[in-house]
Each structure stands twice: as C-alpha cells, then as structure tokens.
Length: 459
Image (cartoon, rainbow, N blue to C red; front, side, top):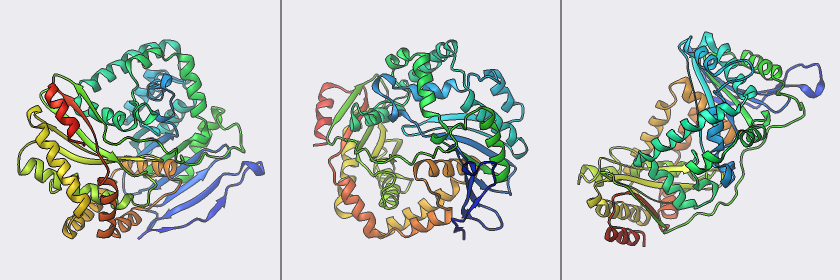
C-alpha cells in the first residue's frame, strides 16, 4: 500500500529566490511507484514516477493548451502547432529529430486534445538523456518557418480528409457540435479546411509564444529513472534555451469552470453514402473534477463498457443489430458528455435507437442491480491496473493529473475509491444524467422519412 507525503525539501541555489522546490507526492514501497515533483524557478513543473523493474522510460511534456483555447478563426492552430514542433529547431532539422530517436529504437509522437497537448518519447532507460534533450529542444526552440507551415498544411488537410472518410470517428466530432454548438468545445480539434488554409506562420508563432511558456508546461517522466537526474537534465535544457527567464513566475493553476452551455434534445444528421449508419445518442455528463465521477465510471462500465454490459447484450448479443456498440464519458474542466455509439445498417437505425433509449430510460428510473454494479466495479478496477502496465501509461497519468487536477493519486487510492462506490451513488447519478433529454447525431445514407423519425427519437 502506498502512502502520501507532502514533505518539501529546498534545493540550494545561488539566489534565494531561485530555489527549486521538491516534494514526494506518493511514497511507494522500496522506491517502486514513488512519485516526486520539482517546481523550478520560472514555474516549470517536473513530475516523475520510478519503476526500477523495467528497462524503459517515457518522457513527455504537457502543454496547458488545447482546441478550446482557440478563437473561431484560430480553430486548428493547436494541432497545427503540434505538427510544426517536429519540423526543426535551431539545433536540429526535422530529419535530425526523427533520426535521433530512430537510431536508438525509440518511439516519438504527440497528441492534441480539447484542453491539453502532449509531446513524448519512449526509449531504453540508458537513452533517456537523448529523449530529454530532443523533446525539450522541440518545445523551446521551434523555428516555425514559413516554408514548413506551407508544407505541413497539406499534411493536415490530408489528416482532415482521412478523418472525414471514417464516419465512425467523424460522428463523435458531430456529436460534440450537437452538444456544444459553436462553442470552442464544439469545434473539431483538427480545425476545418477553411480555418487551416487561413492560418499563417505569424499567427501560429504568436500562439506558440503565448501558450508554451514554462508556467504552462508540465514535464512528466516514468520508468527506470532517477528523479534528480531528470530534473538536472531538464533544467539544463531549458536554461540553455533561455526559457527560464522570469525566476519569480509561478505555474498556472488547473482550469476552472466556464459554465459552458450545452444543449438537450437537439438532432444533427449528416448524409453520407456509407454502408452503415453511425449513431451517437447522449446527454450532458460530469466535469472531470465532479466528485460523482467515480460512480459515473461504474455506471458507464455497466451500461456499455464491455461484453457483459447492458447495451452490448441487448443490441448485439440478443439481436445482432450492431457489431460495435458502447458507451463513453468525456470530462472537461467545467462540463462533460455521456454518449452511446452504435454502427448499424441504415434500415435498422430506428430499432437500435429505440433499444438504446429504452435501456437508458429504464436505468434512469430503476437503476442497475447490485450484481451489475459489483461486476462493473471489478471490471473498472481491473482495467485501471492493466491500463497502467507500461511507462507510457504511467507518464500519461502523472502528467495529466498534475496539469488537470494539480495533484496525484496512487493506483491503490484509485482502486479504493472505485471500490467505495455504493449502489445508491450509482443509481443517483443514473437519475441525474440519464434522466435528461438526450441529443442525437447520425452519419449515414438516411432518407427524408427516416430523418423525420430520428427527430422523434429524442422527443
């Protein structure tokens, strides 16, 4: 069993105001699973988790910026910038960046979400200094040249086209728009063809300078690593780049609520010549900081989180109406979504929707059985542990926790919190969430009569 500690030890510095603050956030057994955090002068946070039994390490830098930070004219800028940081720095060309990690068998990538962006590299533990140097160089020294912006524009437009060719993916963007409208959370992370074509190198550079200040960044590293060595290497890289200028600067706090407006009972249909109709039926969910999120996780698992879930059994196993059917939750700083996805033949979309709607209504009124809740708790506990068995997953957990919550929770604490969920808590959140009027998004070859009936499905 791990335990928490908030002991703070000051590291010496030539200036009193330039002292790095180091904390042990989670104390593991024999050093295994210990999570430590150092805040450097200048506001850069470095969080690590040690796992001496492996031979790998994953190093990542999280930026407190996502697509919800964009204006309508800048839609897609965060993702565009993610691409451009791989195109070269003052020290390295794009080929130098990729070949450095390839030469040691490492993996390097990045992803952009609605509220954050992450750049990471996974390498052998002996090659961690190289990964730190390359990723820090990308984050602090990107050139963002006009010619690179022009070249990468084509690649991003192809990525948008690829997404639009996958209706099973595209329908989730459509559902976000159905729920949030023209709010930033309702716009696609990739941007649109028009907004991407309109973005210039100057606008992207300004966006970069505004959002990639050290106070907006969290460094996360997990694996067979030494915290103090990671801190020294990261500090040296940022100081060499001149990135730690204001030594009195403090890290920004996690996002607070904005009370984003969400809709209910709205229907959006997108006609496409596809073999299947792709459907998302859902309603407002919970913010990621909501104390009921643990009960919501159990509810989601029981409803559509596995082969024994209600939706899978009713829609696929008993009736064979869909191959893929599941439920999911998305939590943001101030709001959230709950959705049910299904892909089915267009002629069966109404039957699938009725089944899904009936199950949601039934659980909202009658709740889940104790057996279903117990099974969902066990499934959620198991998937939580199994999902954290590589250094990349550990890096993701500690980096996102620091950026989004400003605190860390050990795996044991998470398992205890899931186990503590009661049937009454699950039934309460089911009434609150599933009792709302749903919204609906559909992509497929729908006829006019079908479209009219779909509007009736959420009435």
